[in-house]
Length: 123
Image 1 (cartoon, rainbow, N blue to C red):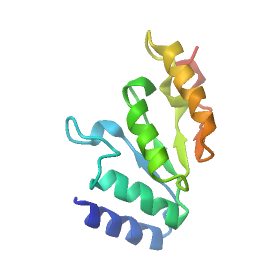
Image 2: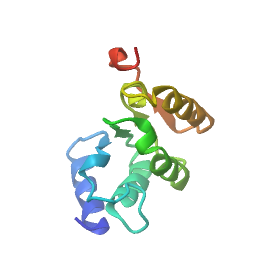
Image 3: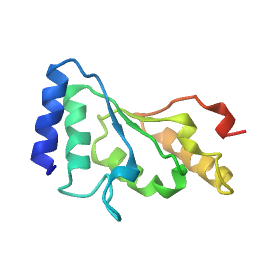
């Protein structure tokens, strides 16, 4: 979908009662970013603020791989609530400690929430 079509689909779903969105960065085309200017991810993310819909992000392979992309989203739309699932997947590889520090650095943004789940991943 292009950005206009993606936002239109989001609006249709909101009218049907949907209350949130989940971004899976691994479903973007290879090399594509969720925060790409003119892309559907950024357009949907910004429209979610206006619809008061949170956006969840699932970084299955670790936060560090998507940290910069997520920061761009956060800064592009400070009124969009973003939820980082499963502690941001900060403890699933050797970079877990670095990723956890990155996760903590996001506390300066008022629109970031961390879902405390799948604790076995950070153990």
